Image (cartoon, rainbow, N blue to C red; front, side):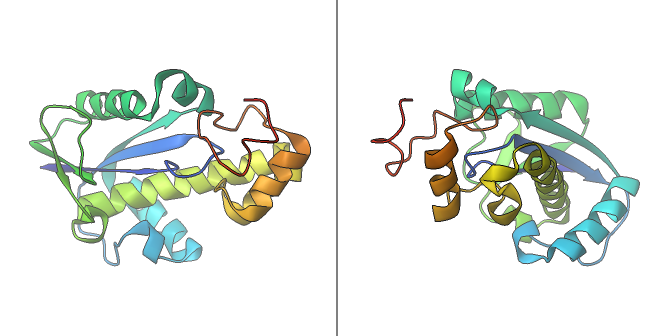
Length: 182
């Protein structure tokens, strides 16, 4: 039994980092890398996945990433998933297992292995739903438009309103360095 693992939110400068592990109990048609699916299709598959799998989601807030660093946070998340979901093997999308013994890696596994695709979809849908909730709390950052990524619009909003508690201050952006005291 394989547990697929993937993350969403590692690149954005706002919102939680979301890591999901998934063990499928039955075959689900249409699984693919979450980034290659439409939001509507991701949502449809998400509902199927959570009803036909064992899964675990770890969310790491920006302040914890700022304090501990992304690598340590990823390591802790992978250890939590491994201790929560019992499987014969674990496969993480990417090229590093962050030092966690027993977790294999594969580049682009989210597009090749159903369990990793499912984890990718769980993580992406969870991250995007959370970002939309944050958009309601912090509407002046226009999070719904850029999902927390460092787009020109987002950087413009940070310059105008400053960082909020949902931002990773350790994510150094040259565009913000001269204008904000980090």
